[in-house]
Amino acid sequence: MLDSPRDRFFGSPHSTGKGGGHEINLHTFYRNGIFLLGHLRGYEDGILVLATDLKENLAMADEFAAQLIKSIDEYVVKNALDCPAEELAILDDGYRAPEIRTLDLFAESVSVIIWATGYSNDFNLVQLPLLDSYGYPSTDRGITQYPGLYFLGLQWMNKFKSGFLMGVGESAQYLAEVISRE
Image (cartoon, rainbow, N blue to C red; front, side, top):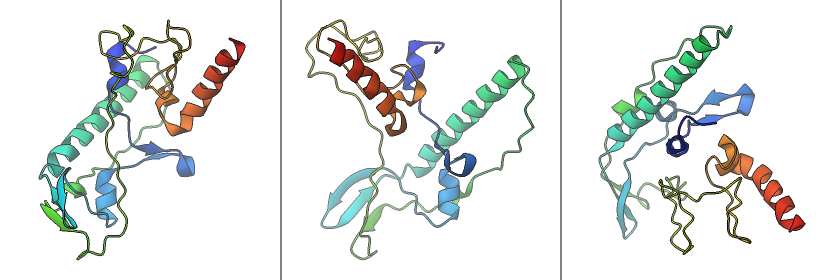
């Protein structure tokens, strides 16, 4: 159970279970040779026009990570868990990245773009009074009060992973079973 329904909208940590699990950090990406850029503002004739907000975005990601670590540490103390002390590396490499304002895709021989961006929900298509005070569908594991109307892939449908590719299958299985019984 979340402390507040609003908590389902906070960002998710960049992490992976690969190799036993570790965080994925933008500063490490930069250290390993990946270019970090501000958000895309436009495109014309093969040239990307970029905002100069990289450092602000890194600061927000770093603050989120710090708050997450703090909440984990508080949980460990509150529950008197016997956990080994963890030394966290100071990661700040990305702050040394140059602010790139334009990027000529052809001149730089860019042939692949990985478009990783935030997504926002738009439930305007559904013209029913089903949104809660946060503008989020009121459901019970994706089941609405309206027969035949279901939602899938929402954040925190019933678990943290419900809104991710790694977890949507479990939610889809549940909804398929519910629908098949109707």
